[in-house]
Length: 172
Image (cartoon, rainbow, N blue to C red; front, side):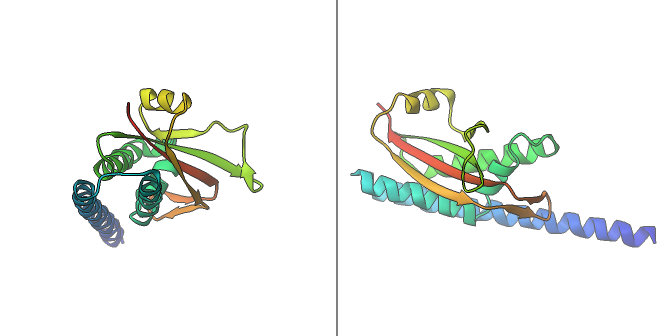
């Protein structure tokens, strides 16, 4: 009986390793595509920057990077995994936008259909300098994205809803 339990655990680990490997390969492919498109078409106006911000959030969610960064934030059980996903998401965004663009992700908890102003926002992506620059205002774009829940075989189920915002603006 112990042997089969050990085999099941080993099989689960192999599946998890395979999923992480596939996710990393997807991220690398997206990074390459983003780097290529960035060199082919620099941002000439706010509309293209706005579309880029929307595409970044959509693709980050579809590839499985966004939800772990938002939902595992401040969960001590998954600090290493959170850090890994956060770094991958940050690398993905920096590969998509040019060096002249700065960015910040901020997530607000939603309760009863509205943003909960009592809960502090989550700022997983963005340096303190970038966040200070954002607070000073200026030209930029904001892409909004709604996360209704997060279900993962590795991390469990989370039902909190978040309003995620990606801010992009030109550095001065």
